[in-house]
Amino acid sequence: MMREESELLARVEALLSDAAHAEHPLTDALAQLYAFHCTEKKRLERLVTIADNYQRYLREDEIVARRRYQNTLRRQEKLSRISDGYQQLMREHNQDLQQASTHDALTGLPNRRMIDERLSKLTRRYTLVMLDIDHFKQINDLYGHEAGDRVLVAIAQEIRAALRDCDLCARWGGEEFLLMLANVGLDEARAIVDRLRQRLSALSVTVNQTQLSITASAGLSEFREGEDLLDHTLQRADQALLEAKRTGRNRSCIAA
Image (cartoon, rainbow, N blue to C red; front, side):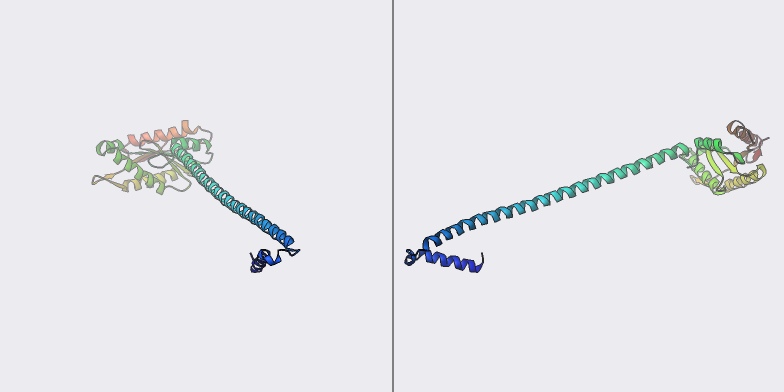
């Protein structure tokens, strides 16, 4: 209430309480007006209180609604992160499955399944090489399979380093590796294989303070137009490998 209003009401109250003005013709009208003012003032104060409470409730409801909305957003963001993480996990899992289905778990080289797929699609000139580690069974027997695995991993790394980007090497099984040398004939392929065998001979793997030396035998065959890859080209490379083993190992032979 403003100061002027307070002072005015105080004057009105003083006039109404003064007996000297009791017979004045305006006294009853002033008293009625004062009573009406007081009633309206109380009603207005109640309305203001109701309006203030309503505004307060609105603000509280708005705060609650905003908190609920923010909580919902946080839950959605959390669910989104969980979903994204799950999808990424599934992608990685599928990639791992794909990797496991087409690559050797020990050496990381392509496996037989992948090579079968590649062989069925190749149309360009290439030479197949079957490479076998000499006397590998003795390494497993004397030093254990863990030592044999270390030797295979070292050999796979050496083969990858020796081949060209356009070539492919796969672990064919056990201690056998299959090389696909692109766009080369038998003579050039044999030179590549002999350089690789020299690298393997220089490779040294230490097992229980023992230096293991490695040699390899290889059989080569060149793809012939119109022949079946697995039944003929690969079979001739395998026969050439057997010939290399029969004639003393640590050498390469070309299929007849």
